[in-house]
Length: 335
Image 1 (cartoon, rainbow, N blue to C red):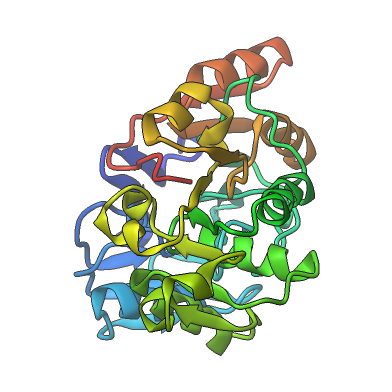
Image 2: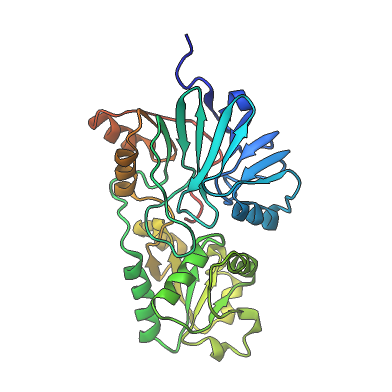
């Protein structure tokens, strides 16, 4: 008698699909990888074959110069893998190109979410709830204290500060893939049409987003500003590592801000020297995690890379079978 779901196996360096000899988001080079999205803790170079959305493959090429073995899979498209395994990529709502992977084999359905969120994001398609037998979910913000505010509230805080101190600029630390572009797009949605100034490390990814149909408005490099005064009353965006380094000294008395779900934790904001914390996350918060599990309604929930214990306890209290996976190499990033 075949043990249910014995064909899919969590290993320390990824999730292994045995009949297909394939891995989902492996942390080391393999012969066949299914990649959920382009963040460095999920997308690694060196695979012989990489299945991912066209956008994720473009991001990987930009970041890792990977071209060989790229196999694009559009949302909703089903690929047949060796061993009679079918794989379908479904929007995850995390960043441009991010996908859940639905795997079907021997009459069983497994969904691997990668990273995901449930909030509206103008830079990527929204998360799609997909029924399955096993739901493998992230738990980055898997504690009840994490309830993220509406992004309009946080963008409003940024714009209010900008208006209150027009002699300064607001310098936002934001992860270069996903967060920076979302902040820019949400500023545009709020009616902020002024030039937004970029650290040089942000430019190529922003241009890639534009090439894939995400309008970001007038973006210019800080290094191209004619003077420090030209930056007064404007928003600038940089990697979190540049918030308080020598580069930031070229800006006019910047208000240091950071866009991250971790900005709910005051100690993290203090450690970063952040003057204006912006609670903007590209991951599901506690309520969204639990709501998603209830909506998917799987027979089993497998929980990975995050705060697993609280989510395990929630599943137990709601008579849902669940266990944690011991995967390595998946980081909090700067969210």
